[in-house]
Image (cartoon, rainbow, N blue to C red):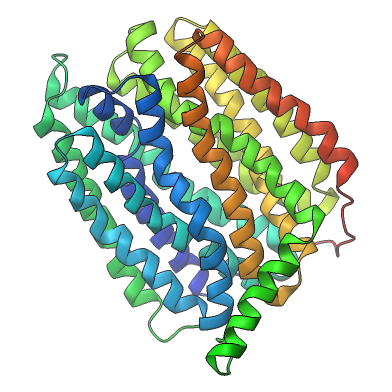
Length: 407
């Protein structure tokens, strides 16, 4: 494996950036504010944010395993078609039930594309999985970084402080659709004739046997399941922040939509800047300590956020949360790749993505249920305690495999 990434790697990064930019425009802070505009309460807002991630729970593991069987290229293109087309469906949303349906279907985009793209990077990276997976993740997260404040800025600019109306939301969703279409077109050009892992030959019965045996082998490895659970639990708080940080910032602290988007943006920016370095460190010195330290940072900063009532302290605390997220996410996927067999990278990344999405989906839904009964400090404090309690389980339950040192 060459020290420099093959040409497919930067192309995948560019496609991932555009896809995530499109997805973020339709998600944060626009989505929870749109649900609020449609009359949703806390539980309903949480469901609206989390329902697209529920899709990943059902489809990420089969999508990753399917790519081991039919090839990565065809599976990636399936996801990009949804990235390109589904955002335009928001233009016809006029009530809360239709929003829930569109959100569930939109989740197919990341459910299909996400684990397969990670499997491709793992195929290409050799002994540098932590570094390359972190670079790929950071570049795609840059799309999220750009999408959140751009969406918030557009709403603030269009409304001039008067509160958004339906036409304002639809303009943001239109821009999301255009970005998703650009990701699809770039993906069609970049993936033309390219396949990093050839599809398994054989009749349908043999392909199905490989499909299910890969899933069974991956899910039977305790290290894969526990490590994936760490990122899943960390994403419990990420999902809760996606849904309720904008609502808390606007309705409790009194910030505008652009400032609410910046709070999310600075968290993502911190993750982007820290993640590649943390991934390289985990390649050289081990992953367990980095994952545990990140969980502690996420738990502490998440519990602190609803106790702050001004913009600057919230911005600083969101940065700390972003650093903790970088520590966890730089190493969890790489540790899963370390312990699985190479022929099952797709299934392993699918299993990882499924557990990831369980946490991401549960976060806003659980937070909404708690906020209907508790205040912000109480609800966030309970979720932070769940994160902290998972650290000793991980430390005691996962033995890190030996690795060659990446140079």
